[in-house]
Length: 120
View 1 (cartoon, helix red, strand yellow):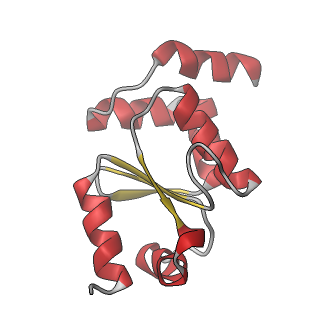
View 2: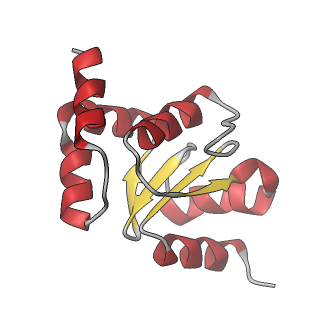
């Protein structure tokens, strides 16, 4: 049995986009997780979701791994990007699009624009 840090490290490095969240991408269990999953889902991003509510060791472990106190947490190409507020800001500013493009992660550019238009 691997410890939580090793398990987290393997998942983060094995997948292009990972969202540690409360609940799942199809059934988020908190508003912040729902917002980030909603953005990724709407933009058509392929990502791995990890439900921290299913494992207390992972729930605490992800906070220790990133040195970030809150969930959700988004990782792209093995790098911690941020939580709900940061992802929201990056989506509205276009920085998330730039990160996906730089990282070779496919997403729906029109959907990203619609999010920004709706929040202008």
